Length: 376
Ligand SMILES: [Zn+2]
Image 1 (tube, rainbow, N blue to C red):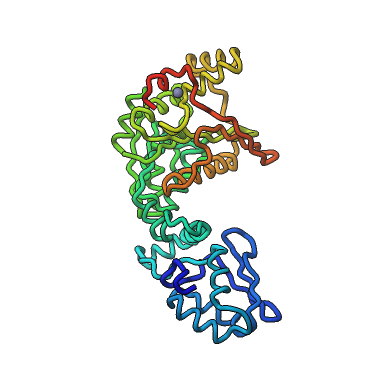
Image 2: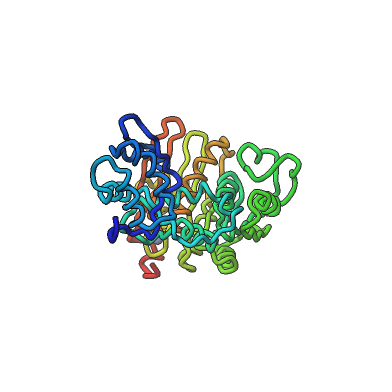
């Protein structure tokens, strides 16, 4: 491990539990991945000592020397290399940027970040768990529409500690919202959703900023103005009216500003998630043109629904909104910390009865005016 470890003070990540077994074996249970990562045959003395030696207070040489004293058989370097290669170590010397209270508030998140980083040996782009947290704390997300999806996503972002969660909705809280829109309550019926949402999020986590606006968007320029005002790294489209137009406006605004957006839908039996990234994926017009290619009739239905703003009554359980919002939330998290965004350029559909997911690519369409113009 000396000279080979990438850690100044190797430390078992918090999601690992050491379990001592008979015959001097030590199992390292990887809680972040829900499996036993390693069973080491090191002898009773080393099995007892190893977790303490890897508490992040010793340099690799000190760990190796102490382990050599306890080891029944074998090479301490080999034991330590196996633990590191299994993605179970972080650096106990990483600068701590959080207060004690913050470290407790975010401890379960930090355990995920440490496991994510440890699982990528050789890839130092994530940095320490504190680096990941600081990246999220420096991030800004715009939530446009605070219904079933938007309210659940906003709550998750607040709990993640995303620095700015900007909230926009024109509506007030109605009793039929309360089956799935987690930020509101019976006492708040009639309140503007954006205001009620900001208040609830501050109560959950007072650290982030929650600027809010009670506003109805009426076109692409309005969405551009919101993006320029709040300067998000990504927009969540959680509004479904006016039908289809809101998708086209958000898509056009995304291409004008270069800021991607992610959205979804929830119905009684299934949910869907997709996202559009300027320069990397098709846009909403591309999607509509793809629909025209597949079915002239479906295309006509879509255009007529937009022209007449026809939306069936929402059919959605709270679980459906939470599931779709959860998938959207994971992809926002991936985007903000630089990991692969699963939904970019694909339509992911999850069946709530079978839990199966299928996907339909949403490529750039050759006839899309936006893409022909070379703006992306
Ligand atoms: Zn396009």
